[in-house]
Length: 331
Image (cartoon, rainbow, N blue to C red):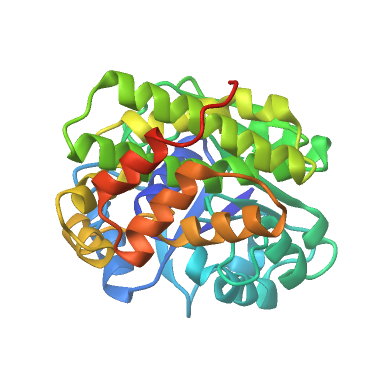
């Protein structure tokens, strides 16, 4: 059994460690050769989770030299803005019978496609029908330290999802399966936008009432979008929905929450990402979620205000006022 994890960031590193710890022959494919060399030499990722020791059996490779063509399982953990190009690269060399598991939470900018749809366009047959998505309250910093975590594996092929479930489940990582690919992927994209709002709330010094209100009403607008696009409403009550939403809106590990906090303090989105040294996926996916909602006639007021702040320079307090003074309505 061989696995290749594409993407040497925090989540890719943590997941590669998980696979290697489960006894799977795993390589982590990095963008920089220096990063790959350091992992092989020191068994630590110098750029992400550098204080976490990696299994000696976990090897690192580059996009130019790797074992992608030999992998039974290919895991993709790269930002949505680079996703299609990476999918093309993977599709050119992947074994036709390989299974593909996506860890990225977002939509493709411009096309508004879910990332499983991108894979189905770029992978050869039959790999394009062997696509899965993993999502849930899964902060890499905790998974990498074996802190008990649950997740969801979504696929239209439940037999394939059950295979992956058995493969990655450990004493500290528990996987559930779900046939609702649409719902799980929309949860993953939309919850990051609500987390930006939660971070802005923190940056303004607001309290628990505000955070709980954002999470609850954010879940409502996420669910509206999902149902409009054919998702199962129950998915939004599960790990990929409310579970991930709570973690992303409240955790000190959350990039999106932190980005929102920095923006409320006066940073631009670019400055916020530079200060964190990591990509906050919501800063890309917010526009896509807003466009997808608009194209389908779905009202998402929190998402609208977040987009106005991060793309149009709207003052955060004005966005709060406009949300709070909207026309009264039933819950």
